[in-house]
Length: 321
Picture 1 (cartoon, rainbow, N blue to C red):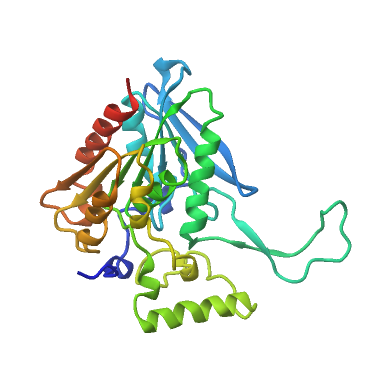
Picture 2: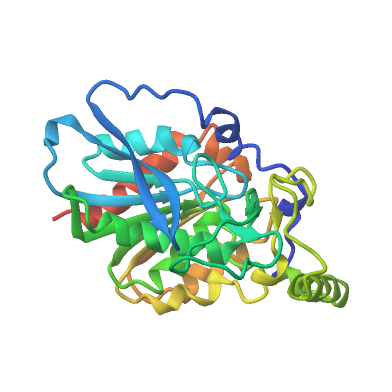
């Protein structure tokens, strides 16, 4: 079996991408749902988050779910799922990664910094790093969102779960291995290994050549939201993926309950090298569910409601008394 068979990198993740178009539209929460936009700071950069809860809970502490979007998506695409989880009795947080959706982006200097500074502050021309895919940055944003939610009055800090889908399904396992406060994760149709960037000699040379160019100032970051890999929105920062393999982290969170939901007919990567292997390596409470009769995108279409209920049942088992 080929661990690096990532056919999904040559197809559009349009199941995650509608949010890209609707992210800035006004959102009216359903009846009975409290909705709020919030500011989360990650590495000094402002991210936009959204919270969902039941109005009837009146701001009381609740088990909490932090959700993160996949490759090319935004938090707006998670609202349907967030509302379902909120109705299930959870305080739910979604957010846009830095450089995506409504969040600000990291900035880099266009030229040398001026010599004259006032208490470390100066005026300079900068360029934002927007619409690129960097799993290290994205998981940092996820972990900072977990830090942020600990300060929320509605968050029961002893009962925090994470939810991720496709590329972010690996992110939540990566995060759980690095933050023992995370008690449960749900990864659906998840990719757990980005080492395809060095899977063969040609890929290895291309990845390291671009890294060298960037380190020497001979190349910058890709254009925002570039379609470098098929129709995928957002070019990858390949050198940041060399060691990014959440499948290696699955066994490093023995106190976290992990649910792995896979598509029976997954066509974009080999389940044996991703969800099945991650489940095998997990050391805490764990469960592997195969959703029959669907390919990758079926989890967002005909089986979306089913996947929501699978996640709710898992959170109820591990985050509620």
